[in-house]
Image (tube, rainbow, N blue to C red):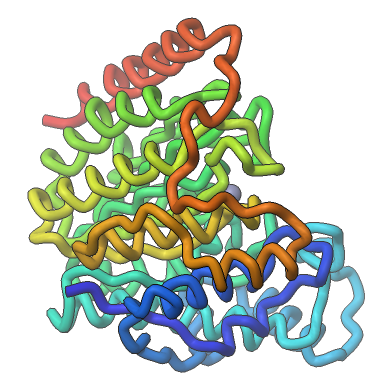
Length: 377
Ligand SMILES: [Zn+2]
């Protein structure tokens, strides 16, 4: 059984009407699940306290976030990554962020207390938040706090990041840690924020060869992700044998995403989600915590996360979207939403360098596995 975590207070994390990281994406998802009559009652998390964040974040940074969020003026907010276009200051920022952290931490607790095996947290995924500065729409790093709880419990954890951007904040926090393996597949930092996540970032000290990065060429397709699942994720999980898998399930590698270039379809996402769950069943007794993350196509992201919900709950995949839902959100967005849950194929025109891109990605994967396997003994 899959437990769902959500608190309406997550919507406090609203970076502004024209900002791509909109709470509307989750609202669309929840309304879709309600329209289908399949949404099980979510467990509502409490917000973590500001002081709870000190295991992950610098105290000065936390104080700054809390102050500016309640309207108190602080000098030099730029050095904390705040007050810019990506991370504007807004009312309720700290509270909204702490509720979302609370959700991911609650997910970790439910796994540790054996209350559930599969958890879907309908929020969180703030993988770019750093120890002492905000970045890439992220303030507090919910993932790192949740993983840290599991590590303190004595667990080994694999963090898998399929968001199209490198999971730099989480990797950085556990770079030298031998209980945490981080695996990020993303569009190469040569072309996309945050400009990191190279194959040679393998971890330090006892964390060496436990940090894995697959930087993909722009316009990478599902075939490159299948290669990754088979050649990277599967052997990594069967070698590391974690107690749990934490997945940042950003939906911004979809072909319609306006902020990145990769070309996944909903069919690819279905394959990826099914394989991740199958691997978790085999390697860690099915203990898996999914969070949301990026995903900036308002017409694709809710469909991708609905697929994740359906798969985690072993439900059939409906062919069509409910008319009421589609009509309502088409009016709200001023955009056309497809009739079907899945993308219609072919979803996009065939790209010119298709074979070459797959070959480059395969080489990246081979180099990564050559690098780590000498340590995996
Ligand atoms: Zn992203």
